[in-house]
Length: 214
Ligand SMILES: [Zn+2]
Image (cartoon, rainbow, N blue to C red; front, top):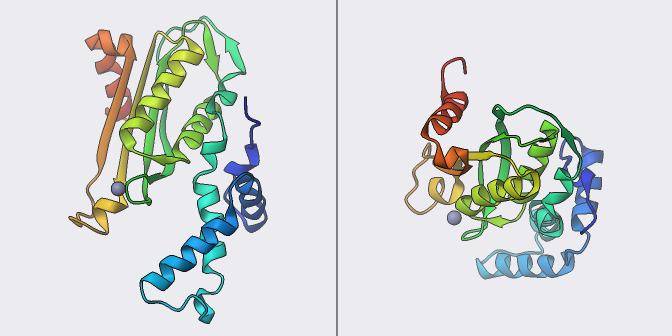
């Protein structure tokens, strides 16, 4: 199992983000990205050596290392520490903010994930669920696969009776280019176990995610 890089997920503050970038950069060929970015700048007719652009390739390289840091991590590292509880109702973590990169355009898609499960003895810390979302989102992604991967991982690791993952995101490739539809968002869901087989369980979790009292 790959080593965890816990601090790679801290992005607030200069000190934190520079150490985060360093850790995230482990195993990423930064000079290669820099060369590629210089090429892109030249290809669009820019001068990569003009003052404002001189540091850009290095900056972009560090940014990609951070945005794709999840490629080097196994999200399962965050589900190893669990508690045994006789709780068999819905556990829901709502509004987990994330930023991922669409693999078709390498543009960000930004949104929130709602993750629910019904434990079968195994319960994990709520922050761990956010960590799982973080790791899986920091890869070249499509929203459908991201939704499915989070759900499958929790089914496999927790043996939960049911897992429901709903993700809403705004895709830059839809809002700033192409059809240019700002404000549009995409919703995907993955229902496993009882959330798939039992309509009232599914209705309950959707009510908890979107219902009154929000
Ligand atoms: Zn895209």
